[in-house]
Image (cartoon, rainbow, N blue to C red):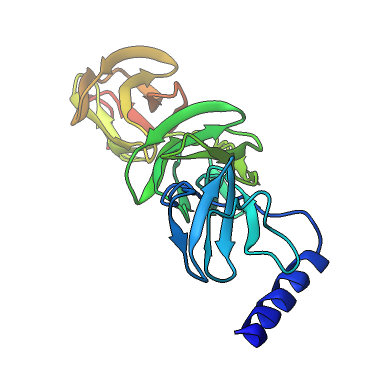
Length: 279
């Protein structure tokens, strides 16, 4: 018995030699020390907001008075509340588009975020372009669509978890280019009749017809001229009119105008003789 007491005394002395500071102990399930009770070695109790462990059998030995080197009790520490660890904020980043991406104005840009939370769950991801909120997603996959505006916008996202903690992702910068300006194309027109160099007789009812088209719009009208004088306007295909031939040499022309107010022309030269003229 003496050897056991000496051994326990050595243990107690070693605990004391480590210092007099003790970590907080959760005393929730420790009984209060009772002077009328007997305690065996290893028994745990609390007394005056401190936790103690019995070094060997004792009875009516106050732990506060009989703790220390070669004593019945060892002080384990102050009874403190054991609290949950501090919550951990979520993590995440923008995965698309990649930094430096170039896109065109009015394109639909899909912004994607990867997000996680080690001690809970992500509850929302808010998407920002140049600091302005454009969308909030509350379920994975975390993404939003944005109609691109010309410039070099900065994309960020704010990730929130169930502990009301949040982080802002690293910013991603992209380039949005304005569409190239394409000059409108003039229409095309050809004069079908009368043919260039053809001969006619005074009083003939000549058919003047043209074909016209526009590669980037529509033909709005075709005007017919004889010697520079407007004789008719046609606003729909087939583009045609008629003219009563008069004596002399004439220039027949057709001028097409498109939806961009651009024009194109075609012409032919004809001769008209009197029917009494000798052949």
